[in-house]
Image (cartoon, rainbow, N blue to C red; front, side):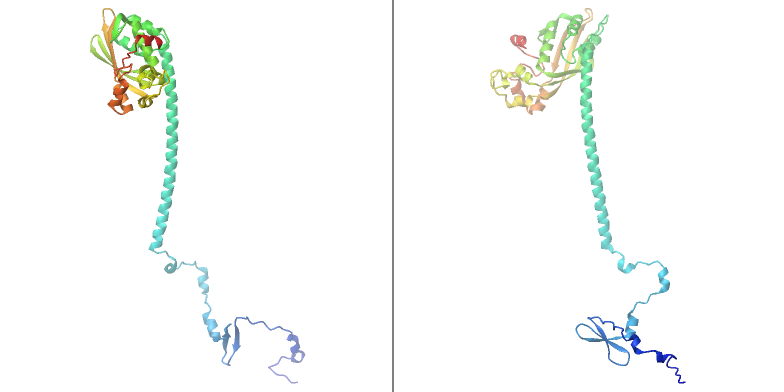
Amino acid sequence: MNVCSLYPPNSQSLSNRVIGNVVQRAIPSHSRFVRVNSDNEDMMEDDSGIHQPFGRSDVINDAPVVDLLSLGQPIKANHDRSSPGPAHDEDLAFARKTRRRERCRVNQARYRKKQQKHAVDLEGDIRELKCQVQKLEMQQASIPASTPTKYNVWTFTTGYFRRFSYALLETTDHLDFLRATMAKDVRDGDVCGVEALIENWRLFSLSFANIHVELERLDKATEDHLIAKTTTRLTISENTLQRLFPHLNSDGKGGVEGGEWSVLATKLLDQRLVICGSVRFDWDATMERVVNMHSQSDMLSPLVRVLGSLEDVSCVFEKALAAPDGRLMIEPDRRGSV
């Protein structure tokens, strides 16, 4: 029996045709390996046809060696290559500052808008409250007060301004009060008598709009003389221009004949004036009545603020039916037509 250690015992049953149909693997078109010598050195041929040596040792040496112990450890960043430099830090700080400023700007704009809305709401509430207060004060002024058994200069003065705080209202309480506290021949400048005082108040009420007379304080000059400091707020209306300043119209009659109003009249229209004034009351303790009074108001100062110059104010009062001290100079025939 022929036995060789180089061949298996069943070598006779094996045949080359068993693996004869194996297809050879295709070599990539861009490169191929060619055996050039017996020293186990291969050549790699690229698409250009250039042969380059490519040894097995080179393949093994070029492959990365992985440390199995390092696989279980956390990966540490390479600070030499990935850590940002000073310029990068400055860019990040500038970006953060820019975003913070933008947020602050938006928050401030939202806050300002909220504050403006709150201020507008407050102004509306204040106007509404003022209207309600004015209505209540007018109702209070129209209610006849209980007549005290005995007047003095103090009780008279407070009662006087309480009734005439909104000029002359349609009530007989005003006339009854003046008749009970004033002498029949009481004088206020050129005005003489209780009925004349009431008529002067009526003309004043018809000549201006939204009148409010406020008593600021009382100063005692002597035992029977009292000075009341007042603040009068009123509006110059078209009726004011027609009755007191008719010369500011081109027809000279307050627009009765269809003239045009001057620039000064246009500036005055709808202006709200705040006029400081005073009233002195002379009291007769024996009669327990007011025997004399003197009223004056400073219309000059608010008109200068509105018109801007004394020359324009002088033109306004040149032919006006009202004096700078607040006195009305309406003629008797015009008094009846008011």
